[in-house]
Image 1 (cartoon, helix red, strand yellow):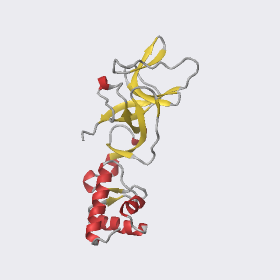
Image 2 (cartoon, helix red, strand yellow):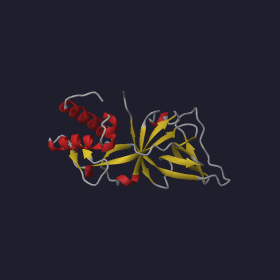
Image 3 (tube, one colour):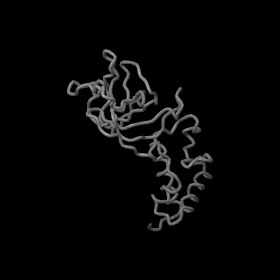
Amino acid sequence: MAYTPPGETRKKVYEFVRERILSGSPPTVREVQRAFGFRAVQSARQHLEALVAEGKLVKDSGKARSHRLPELGRVRSSHLIPMLGRVQAGELTTALQDPGDYLLVQKTRFDGRELFALTVQGESMLGAGILPGDTVIVRRQPAARPGEIVVALVGEEATVKRYRQKKGRVELHPENDAFEPIVPREDGEPFSILGKVIEVRRNLE
């Protein structure tokens, strides 16, 4: 990379790390190295250590993604939960797995290990205020009450729908009249509830 004064590079490293932390995915040292084209991982580590010494970052030992912003408080006040890919709100589609992406959520009554996040595709849940591109926060649980919005697996495909039961059969209902309910077949087609949607997030930009 082109030469820049150490202070200017450090400022850019801080801005990069801060943006990643606020987006919910604190970078590892090697990710900082790759982002700035440092030849050695030690160069990235030195910049991060200097930012910690200046009080601009705080480092928690024993974690790969260990840096946080002082103003966000200690890690125990929030959770980094995994982004597991995309889930269809419409026709069924295979759920994509994107390990390594995380989302920052404030500490709630739920253990962070119970939560995961998915990005929604499709328009079948418009009536419930869930739009394409929204992120749903999901609490892992194998069962749901009628009327709750769930992420369910039918066969090998995931979908977000409202859970219903009719005459003892499971039905997954959309919130859009242009879509039909999904009724798992009775021939042994695999079906499971991955979790209940407890929060919806939307980026307005």
